[in-house]
Image (cartoon, rainbow, N blue to C red):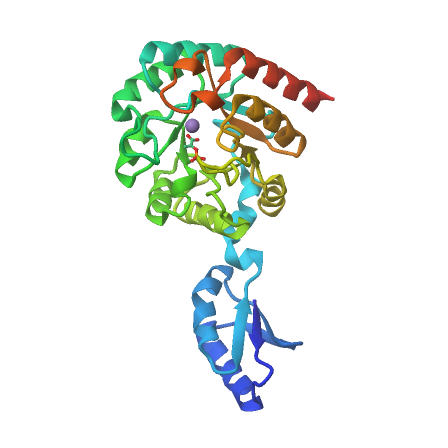
Length: 328
Ligand code: PEP
Ligand code: MN
């Protein structure tokens, strides 16, 4: 941690700061550097709590925490990554399926076709966070049987978005990975509950969230119990936006800092199936570890996000092209 002192700080103020520092961060060692004090020798996790107290001290201009002090668990998380239910070390992972589960027959048919086309896991969304309260909100718990049948039929793990802490118990009984959507990346009580569930979690970056905010949300999950975490870059696009795109530089930086798998969602960043397919290739080339992508047998009848949903045929072609490139 760096404590920046103001240029007008007096010698007495600096001495007082050192004494207070010993009380706030017991065991910490301080070294005078240009512009302030460099502090080490304390538990990284205590830094976020200590910083505001230190900033109240006269003569202190501010504090700067290292990445390890900000997110100690995230910085170490990539080292012991379980291979199940998704083995990112072995495969480029495709998580595919319609935006939302609708009727059972078409979901099961799409699930089987997507498995045959190379999917490693199914999008199995039951609750949809929608901008309009009048828009289709998802089938809710009524769809649990459908997704359980899809898992039995295909053997593929289920990735399901959780939108409320009260859904955790029922979803955990059936689903294999909990998805935290872009709108809920900053829902800290939901992050705690998802962490406590112990289930693997896929955490999306919120629209316009910084890398620091994204990683702090990941830190919540790990602090509360998540052991298996995947990050997902979904871009900054909102429904009215006409500028599709993923922040691939941020995706790479998240990978570098954490060692965690980072996948891309080209569907929600483009709102167009043609653009989604080409952005998916770009993301794979840029180093994404997999894709969360909307694909089904019947995008034309989907109640939500049909325009951006790939047909299974296009998905199969895309998966083939990516795998071909990976082998080169
Ligand atoms: C989704 O993947 O189903 C979804 C709602 O995406 P996002 O949270 O990124 O908007
Ligand atoms: Mn969608």
